[in-house]
Every structure is written in C-alpha cells, then in structure tokens.
Length: 337
Image (cartoon, rainbow, N blue to C red; front, side, top):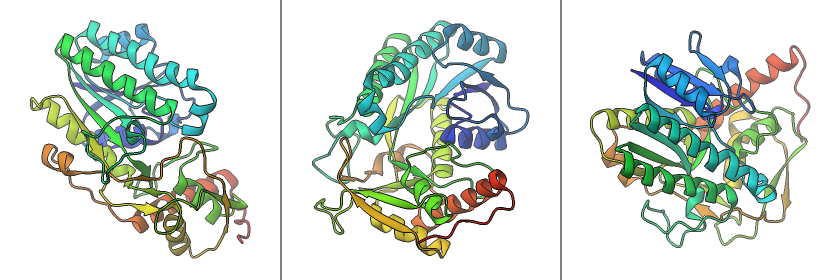
C-alpha cells in the first residue's frame, strides 16, 4: 500500500514524507518544485517532477506504485499574493485539486487527506473557532481552499471516497533534528521572518497592524509545530484505514500568541535583538484565530509533542542557522539591531 504525497518536497509535505518513511510506509511524491526542494526528501523516496493537476502523470504514478491513499499538500499559500492574483490561486488550488480528484476517482483511490486552512473561517465571531463555525473567507486563498473542501465532499458522496480535511492554523518550526525545514526564499511565515532577522538576514521585521483590539494590539495566532502536524496527518491516515468516516478537523493547539509575543520568543531563544517596525494593517489579515481542538482530540489518535512556542521558535532557529551556514559557508551573521 503506497501513499501519494502531492507537494511532498515542500515545507509541510516534506515533513509528512519523512514521518511516513520513518514509519516504514511506502511513499511516492509528485511536486513541481516551484517552492519545494528534492533535497528535502529522504533517500529512496521516488519523486515525480510535475503538476498534481496533470491527470496523466497522476494516473501513471497511481498505477505504477499501487497508490491507495493520497495526501494533498500542493498549492499556493500566501494570502497577500492571492489578493493580488486571485485567478492564479483558483487555478493552482481549486482547479488542480479538481484534476487530482478526477484521476483518483478513475483509478479507484478512495482515501484522501486534504491540506486546508483556518482561513476558510474568515474573521470568526467566537473564539476558539469550531469546525461548525460559518465559513466566510476574507481572501481568495481561503476561498480557493473552501471551494476544494466543497468539491471533495461532493466527490466523496458520489464515488464512495472517504476523506479527512485538516484545517491548519499557523504552521511553524522545523524538524527537531534540523534535517528539514522551511527553505523557500521570500517565505512570509512570521516565525521564518523572525528567525531570519535573528540571524542577520533581514534588517528588520514589519508588524502589520498594532491597533487591533487584542492585549498588545497585534494579531493573535494559534501556532502548530510542523512535525506535530505531520503526525496528525499520519493519524488521519490510520483513521481512514480503520474505516473512519469523512470528517473535517482543526489542526492547532487551542491557545494563541500575538505577533509581538512571537517576536519576543525568538529574541529569547536566539539571545539576539533585531529591529521591529510597525506598519499598517494588511488586507485579508484576520485579527485573532485560535482552534477549538476538541474534535481532533476525540477523533484521531494524536498527541502533540511540541506544543510550546519557545520550542517551536528554537527548532525554527536551529534550522535557519543550518540553512545559513550551508548557503554562506563561513560567513559570519550580520550584526542585528
């Protein structure tokens, strides 16, 4: 039984592939390497370079490797980019998944795990947000993911497919052994930006909006360690293999940290100061987003191992230090503010 991981050379996907490989699973990857890296994959894992929406490619991989489950990570994830170019997001997120699902149906693959997002909720009225909360996305990114959720529900009902939709909150950190992490240039993840600033690769970090009605005026996020998230996917796969019914689950820890608190956590674990500059609010940003985690706790056999902001920040920093050294050799870190 082989698991196909789309986007498996990317940030979250590569952690899932590593988790599967370490568990002795047979795994195969499709990735166009637009934001992923073949070097992020464990040795011996087959990589097919191409688009997850290429039905001929997908059908060939399913047939050649005996794929029985698909874990779908491939897609675009930057909210401001989606505001500037919504059609690209509907093409890359929604249309690609439509083609992937069509290939899965034709080949009889009946287990599907989808990488969704808390952005489908928009700006929730109540916090923490439950899976049954109204879905009112504020960005084309969130809308493209919600459209895919709806499509997956309909396909599953028509073709006997079982699925788990995992709505991520804020994914951060890196492999605890610093083997893999977020390596994409120009990444917009808050913790990634903060550790880049801590290692002297950025002159400053911008905080978009400090006038929100939150304790310190900055946005509040529920961070989840990327390795814990990978294990949540493994647990979702086991759940489906054991006959679990289709479901939608929040993936977070159930507690939030503000942007300014997150920056301070990076300062503490790095022992370095760096410049922080306030900037106006960004279109599409959500003030507070914290997961209600009761459903995932009662549905999956999953216990987070790294539910601590400083641990997440320390792992992100260790990966960034390693990445900096690999890219720049013996260069010293630039002085921070």
